[in-house]
Image 1 (cartoon, rainbow, N blue to C red):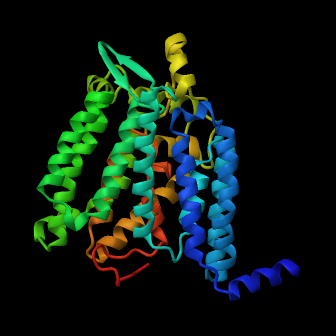
Image 2 (image 1 turned 180 degrees about the vertical axis):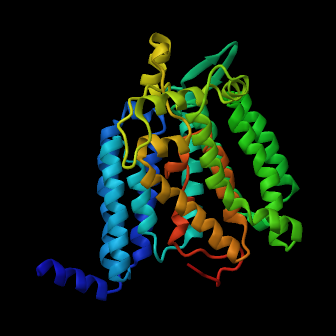
Length: 396
């Protein structure tokens, strides 16, 4: 009774719900980013996880005591949270639980403001990480592919380094969508090759290059170009289509098939490892504990040099949803992305659908669709989405 009275009193004082969420968002992004770096030599992952759980108490408090939801909606929210907890415990990974909490508790928060915070905080942290790695304060892990050296500059793996740059580019494109000009696209073009030169992340280079045509079409659609509007209105379909292709190709992968072998080589062996994942663990409704040995991080770098034959990792976000986190959570998280895209397209706004379209493509080759440190865009589901350049217009 005392607790209920205290909470009622706080609500009556009109607590700033947005401030509670923004604080939590910044903290979770910071902690999530930290986990992608070699700073984990000094700050253990289990400590980062524990701090994250403490921070999540704030958005959960906002969700259950400050947000206005009918009982029926609260039942749905609680059900989704419970499924995410089951998936977390079965998979042994908390990334989808963290993402789910932040998605469901974002009601009444300015999405544009969150992406601004994400962009500047991540950019500062990214530059600081590179600086500290060059000074030798944290490790700059160097990998070798043939005669080519791949640098990660304080990030756990070269492709993760490239993925941070890709995410920053997407955030920039969203925030400056109406101001993207020829010079912006020249910058992205040059940046893609710089990324490949540093990290030899060929597939990441392609995703950065794809920003150019995808955003050009979205901008033209926003300006009411009929053909581009038709094209952009189908951006949302990439999520179910690519998810199906990823699952089908991996499940039916056959090494003796020359076409499969060709694509497997293009994807750096990802099809082969996804097939092994299906053979060993199968599809899962609620999640699976999958034993993985990646080469990212200080421990993975050591393993690469001493036990390379033990490598096994599911890179594709779609495959991770099917095997590791469970089909139910996969339907939930991909459904969120589809809903956001369709809502924006319905209102004839194409910046966010373009971003999610690009994320859906990169999700074929990386696991970062599920991580807030790389993908803050799913929070748009319940947050207030101001139309870029029209701050007085809101819709949910």
